[in-house]
Image 1 (cartoon, rainbow, N blue to C red):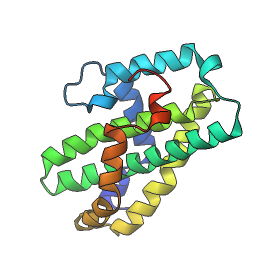
Image 2 (image 1 turned 45 degrees about the vertical axis):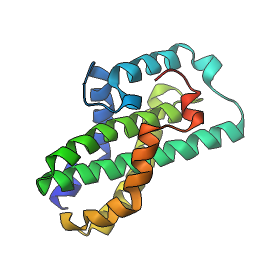
Image 3 (image 1 turned 90 degrees about the horizontal axis):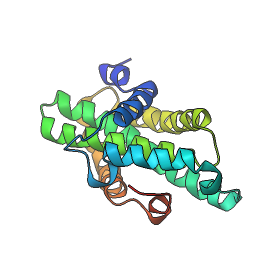
Length: 174
């Protein structure tokens, strides 16, 4: 297992989600994913779960589609953060680390729809893992190959973290 594979694990994503929930007022967090907003959003979701959760299969599949999109982005940002930091690009790595928090949180929030919190965490982990594995295979153990992942994922992932789709915005305040 390469160094990047060791540092970028699915468990890391979940601990980052918990860390993001615990941090309040982190100044460099993207507008749409600040910890205080995420905490408020999580509280709204947990206290209003009965009214927010949708029974419709269509709604659930749409939530899961976006949960998977954010999971892919969480995996991308995790891998890119490590690769860029190892190459000395700390500024971009820090920005991607913040986006990683946001993408992980959004994936969890979307997975939470119609589920209890424990199951939602498991769903979020199960969504991140295959994306992470596929991206690490593309990297082939070489941080220099990060350009491939950046070309494939960066624009889309930055966009959906900075400007969440309407279905995500409709879930509650950010």
